[in-house]
Image (cartoon, rainbow, N blue to C red; front, side, top):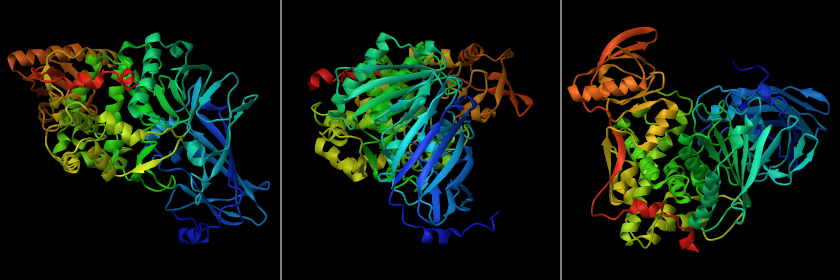
Length: 632
């Protein structure tokens, strides 16, 4: 319903005054009620008299979609010179707020609360779930309003944060000065502030990584319990090696210092994994409470920290032109996410292997899982790789289910396979004299150290640099793979590297660890389904035996061949079905109704691994080999 007091949006756009000469916004954040899942903020914004529009950040860098969690904004009050001012939300752009500034007013005070509770799926939920009894993550964009005309590179902000008593903090922001529980930072641009999250908590640990390396690197951890702050000597050595190997790979840095910001809680991540988001001078990593102590999580830790760190070069310093808007309200173009995320996915796994965070066997097992995932994507029949990038914003608030048919963020996994192929092809074309390392150094390193800045790139610039390394028709190469509707994944990179995707009845050690920790069962490449630990169907391959039998995401398996469901009973049944060629008898529950189905599974258990091709060079071994000593 349109309010009769709303000023027409067209008039507001035409009547917006010039920004105030003073372009310093003061942002005071109070985490005192973080335990209640509430973050308070007080903003003081310079203004001029007349109609004025404030906006809440909508398109957040790194999310690639309009994920600004405005639904959790509450308690919004505006005042000036001690008098309350009324405001109206724009009826079309719900992220914009209009207020009329009275004569003589030079600053507007805004008070607001952010409710740190999950409201939707996807990145919006990730930004919202940020507090527990013992810790908090402050992603500054969730408590910000700024003038609609302000440019993030030019609008200055003076940030500060008040912590609960006894809490400590870490952030990539500079110039921290603490008075009692309040920390005030140097003035920064709005762009820098949004790019610099803060973690705080009662249980806190900080230590230097690769202390002999410049710029300085730190690992900062907050957790719900002190036990979760502990890291092993092997993990710390892997992080040191990661910094050294990344420096050798890219050849330069684009940050003054770097902080791995890690927050650990079962509220932040239900499964024993770690995930994160990239920033120029830090990563925002969240994990389950025992992520540094779980044998199953070490691969996730190694991959994720390497992935987000590599983003400082690919995604932050060099960024697709469509991911570089002039504000946080304009839509992004996600067309090149297969480079932004796909190449980083590949580089992250490679750096994890080179640093020793994962073993060579685990490196190959990860590639096998990526290949199996994409090779069994039934949605490849109708949706190509590029569209998985472009369509991302349409999927941000959808639930899980039928992801195999719908295709979601496949630009990660298929993008990684694509860049493995590029790496293998360069090595073959140049007789191993050059590799994708040379591309990363030339394109993302650019041979000079800088502070945080953004250098946008286009598709044509990518192919031009590749041609300077290994002459080839890269344009045609990428166009064929970006728009392929082949039912099978692009596996040529694995084949060119001297390996093939194969299957066996026994999961790899990596898969065994993952399944033991989660209790899940992935049978997509055999019967065509994935199950959670309680037997709930999480996905089904379109056209598979499970699909034809009537299984669908959301259903729950109650019995397997008349036995109560368990992973063990399902595996036994799959083995028996392979021997006898008889279907598995299942009892399922769907929206409160039970029925029986017959599930064909003639292939039994099938788990992916890579198999060596005799008589061929082992390029994967070359790719995973550390390069730091060789580059000195």
